[in-house]
Every structure is written in C-alpha cells, then in structure tokens.
Length: 321
Image (cartoon, rainbow, N blue to C red):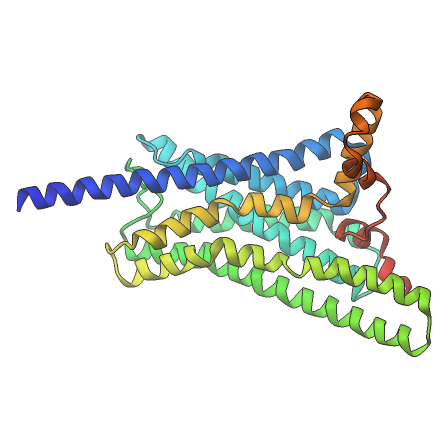
C-alpha cells in the first residue's frame, strides 16, 4: 500500500511538472507576442490612433497576464498571492478590452457614430474597475497565503464558486457580446452590399467587398476567447462538481490554450496591415538596397491598401457607403 501511494505521489509530481512546463511555455509565447505589439506602439508614432490605443491596452493586459502566469508554481506565500490575484486581474482586463474594441466597432459601423474617442476614460474605468472588483471578490474564501505547487486552485467550494462567478461569468459574457457585435456588423455589411448591387454602383460594391473581407476576418476574434478558455471552463466546472478528481489531459489543454491567449490576440488584433506597413517602411529606410532586393514580398506590404479593423474604426469608411 505504501509503495502504491508513493507511486501515485510520484506520478502526480510528474504531471505537475509537465503542466508547469506547458503553461510556462505558452505564457512565454504570449508574453513575446504582446510585448511585440506594445513595442510597435511605442516605436511607431503613426500607430497611435484611438483604435490602436485600445489594442495597445489589450496587449499590455496580455503581457502582464502572461508575466504573472510564468510566475506560477511558487514556493512562498508572497509569490502565491502575486501570481493568483495579479494574473486574475490582468486576464480579466484582457478580455474586457476586447469588448471595448467590439463596442467601438459596433458604434462606428452600425450606429454611424463618430464620437468613439469620447469613451476613452469610460473604457478605462470599465476595464480596470471591473477587473479590480472581480479580483477583490475572488479573494473571499480563498487561502492564497498558504504556499503550494498549484496555489491558484483552492479547495473550498465557496472559493471555487467565486472563481467561476468572477472570472468565467464575465468571460463568457464577453464572448457572447463580441459574437453579437460581429453578427450586427456582418448584417449591416450584407445590407449595404445588397443596396449597392441594387443601384448597380460598381465602385461601391468593390469598397464594400473589401470592407466585408476585413470584417469577416474580425469574425474569428470571438473564437480566440472560446479556444483559449473552453477547456479551462470545462476543467473548472468538472473540478467544482468532482472535488479532488483531476483529469490530466483536460488540465493539459486547459493550461496550454489559456496560456496562448496573448499570442492569439497579438496576431489577430495587433499584427494588421498598419503594423506590417510601419515595419516595412523602417526596413526600406535602413536596410541596404542589396538586402532589400532579397525581401520583395515583405517590402510590398508597404503599398498594400487593406481595409483592416483599425482603419475602419478610425475613419468610419462604412458610414459613407
């Protein structure tokens, strides 16, 4: 019996090490991706428009969420506390910033409003205030002062319920809201396309097709949150219903996909044509002509005139259709 218990403990330790490695690797990739977007915003003045500011704050949230996730597996109370609550705060802020971006898009395209920049301070109050409130509520009934190998998982049913309420409830609320926003925008563009066809305005049809192509790409953005947190949600619900019973493969998918959220966001929201064009211009400016000739594809990005999410939000091109 003693040998069986020892073998079980050894297996649990190996599983823990694997999960730590997977979570750290995924978080490191997200940290690199979000840091790249932050760096682009700081270096390239032409990117400092209101819409990209929202993406910048999203990247900042992802960056710190990933950073504190890497601090996982702490061996003392302070790092246990810092990991749990800081990661919770910035991860909640991350998906709340996606709703701010969705709201901006919806108000510009569907509501035909041009006052989105006036909501900047409201967005900050909404995102940081809600994140702080959920983090404080999350602390009720938790025992984060006790060091452990996986200190962000608490054994008390009250703490687990509060974790579901303060994190996963707003998360899936954000997913539903972003999905609804895409549906409204897509319906708006479909109506505009039909009107353009009806009046045989070929130039308008071409513009709307380009806008629709850009928004179809945006339609995948709600899937980022779903892919990142679906396994984590299932894992938390299972743990709540079956305390102490862990499914290794589910935990593996949980920490892996959740840790990649920042990377997914940085690619989908941040790596748009404006960023690629800014990078291409710097390459064109500083690289010798001999090297530039070997990079024709990258340099051609500078002349691309894609209708990306950022330009559509700022300029409200769809409003004029």
